[in-house]
Structures are given as structure tokens and as C-alpha cells.
Length: 308
Image 1 (cartoon, rainbow, N blue to C red):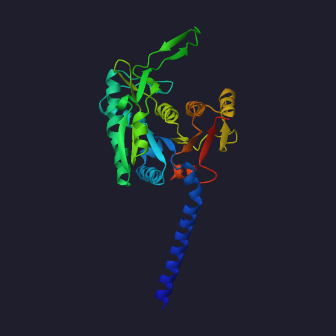
Image 2: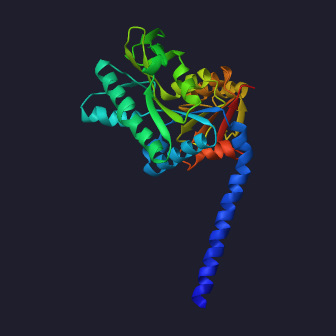
Image 3: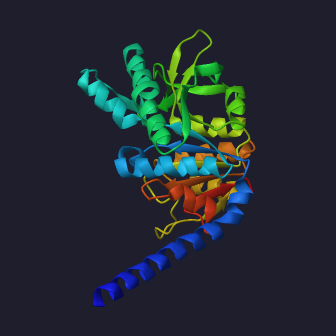
């Protein structure tokens, strides 16, 4: 009898667990309905992409979004993987203001790694999770037209500003979303490598955050989600700022409360919301199911930036 009592208790405990899961699903329903039929652009990178367990969870979450009627578009980075390949091939790499100087030899490797191995790893993970993913780069369907990124730096001694040559580092000039619009009504999840093409057919390596923001604006996305390795924007006390207007974000950059590597991420979000995206969110990709927490719970999971 004692053994049977134990089995009964185990079943009861499991029942409580599953009831809790059912309750969670039920509470998520209004949020699922709110985003149904909408496009969500997800910038995928950082620790979330380098950790096998988190990669599996990410793929499942993206498939779940598609399953409940949301249209996820994944844009990925790949800096660490590019660096490893350059080291294997004994190609030296230089950074200026956080951007990799990309000569002709390097851009070939960047394209190979981003559009090849990384892109197909993500596609495979989504497919194994039950989805139907297709890997693309900005060259496909003339999706991302790009031009050479121009950056200037002021010499501290002479105070003269000089242009920096970053090689084949680009910025988007035009996004052609018709390929993505075609996928919107299908079961396809597009996975995009941040490679653009110049007017003369040259290849440009583009920052993945920048590409994600530009695509979000071009496809009229409801949300831009930027996965990173920090909680989001923090205030002076180190507490997460859950929501801010574009004006507050601009002020934070101006007064230095938003600083360092967070500035370009916030600027990407600002550009997206100022070009029609309802809201952009910087969230911690190291947190399991961060995307679901952000979209399907009342308090979200990161810093949400709205136009006003």
C-alpha cells in the first residue's frame, strides 16, 4: 500500500505542475491574440547564440511564435565565429570604434561564415524544433542595398577630423522587403545574414543590429527584439529601466546615463521606432525563453522603447 501511496502523490504533484503550465498558457492567450498576424523582427546574437541549450530554446520559441500566428523574422550576427575562422586562417583583424576593418580577403571569410555555417546552423535548429526555416543573406532578392560606411575621428593633437577607411563595412541604403512579404503568409521563417550588396555588386559586412532595425522598419514590424548579453538599459542604481520614450532615450545618451556599447543598440531601436515600428526592446538573450517572456507576459523582459 505504501508504494501505491507514493505513486499517487507523484501523480498529484505532476498534476499540479501541468495545471500551472495550463494556467500560464491561458494567461498568455490575450497576448498571442494581440500579436497574431503581426511581424516580429528578432536580432539574434551574443551568448544566446553561442550556448547550445539556449540555442535549442530559442529555436523552439521562434517556432512557437509562428505556430500561434506571429511572423518571426530572424537576423543574426556572428562576430565570435568570424574571429575564430580568421584566426584559423591566420588573417589579422583590426577594430576601430568596435567595427571590424574588413578588407577584400576578410569580407570573403565574413560572408562565408555568416551566410554559410552560422546561418545554416540556425536554420537547422529551427527545422529540428518543428519549424520550416529558410536561410538568406541581404544579397538574396536584392533585399539589402548597401554603401560603404563612413566614419570620422578627430585627432586629439591636431583637432583635425579625418575619415576612417573601414574597408567593406557597410550600412543599408535600401531594404527591398518583397521576399519577406512573400514569406509572411506562408509557414516559412526567414533567417537573414547581415550581408549587403553595393551598386557595383560588391559585398558589404553590416552590423546585425543595424540590419535588424532597418528590416523591422521596412516590413512594418510590430516589434523589434534585440537580444544582447545584458538585462537592458539600466539606471544609475543598476536597476532595469522597463520602458522609455524616444525622448527619454535621446536624453539618456546626451547626459551619459546610456553609455558604451548600449548606445548603438539604443540608437538602432530609436531609428526603428522613428520609422514606424510600434516598439523596440533590448532584452537579455541569456535568459531562457526571453522572447516569450517579453511578448506574452504583462511586464516583459527588457527595456521597451516607444516613439513617444
